[in-house]
Length: 136
Image (cartoon, rainbow, N blue to C red; front, side):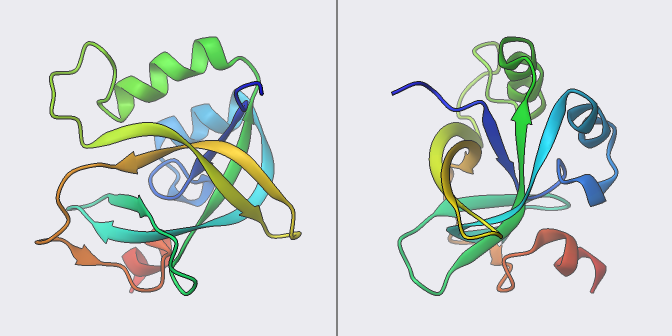
């Protein structure tokens, strides 16, 4: 099975986050659409972290992008998420292949940056939507 070209984003890389890298991602990829993933979302001090779960009622809201040139995009994105080989461990995130549910009902495989440190002292974003929680 080939690796996916798609990336699920749920925080500062979403189009509405309006960050420089979100704008760059939009220019160097194609927006597949809004989507969600089974997971728990945590506030990490101005940005979110997602932990994948099998809980039926736990969803993280985001978007899926199809990368035009993954070999160029991954080093930039991994550096942004501080999980490249050049970043000293422990890394907050790990890029993992996950199952994503597109708003149209289709399930696809995509990469996502999954939070991999302890969440015991982190506030959970119950809505699963970082941008919505940030506005309130």
